[in-house]
Length: 383
Image (tube, rainbow, N blue to C red):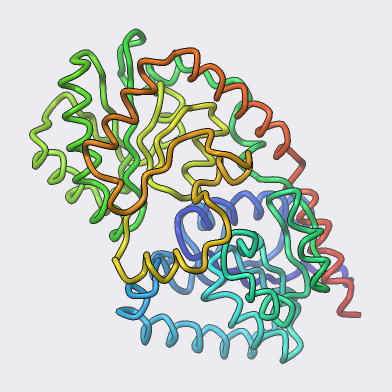
């Protein structure tokens, strides 16, 4: 490896990828203080000096039908980015999650001699196992968040390193609920339910209304419950409209961002399936996981699903430690009933918090250093 500061191209396609990439950049800058990183990213990456040529929300689209509506724009961005990177020749391209966008891009770059690292193993253990051939063509190395993934990839001839999950180092092993409630202006006593309806337009469109309708039912059964909502600022108007539509007013507090504080402050959360469910588990919070999507997308994905779980806490624990309500089952009555079951069972809540503590310990590694070590080895292979 040369003594000059390396250059990196990176793509993070949504809020969770932006968060992971930001944490990775922290570790990389310890190794290479003068590094340059550019590509597609969001605000967490920008705060680390990342140069975003396109904003990450251009790629924040999930589902077959939803992607079709934006297909031409997304493919156009990928081709423009590819041509620019082939001209600039970064030392390494790092694709952060977003496999539908990144794997094809990585394949083209790698074929042209650009080293490629993929951060977050695509969930071939959950669905689409045929993707292993594409991963092998596309990636010089895969950085894995979960301990069982490197052995799975090795069986397909794909080099990989378990680096732990960065959030396990960021989030406290023992969250301070009282401090979080004070910071948010919540009463320190009483039950608090956090509502996280997702970070994408489609998620909020499908989930906000049933979530708030469920909250209204919970409040009827337990009038003292406080509700607090973590909202992506751009989606706040849609969230406020859904709350009003459910007949909820000042009893629901809607806060821009601050999801970690909100999850720390709550007793349990009603939450959209995704990375936020792992954040809730690392903060030791019981939850009700829900997801709804376009009907056709759901049935396509269901046929390819390899496991009975969709939520990361359940996948990692290997059982339904928290309830999952998907598609038609994610209706207001069922959601409210699941929330009330938790609130009426403090022993069950304490037991799942112990499970989540063990999960946190499993995922806690020096992620930034392990990932940077692996990336440095990929760079050295250029010689």
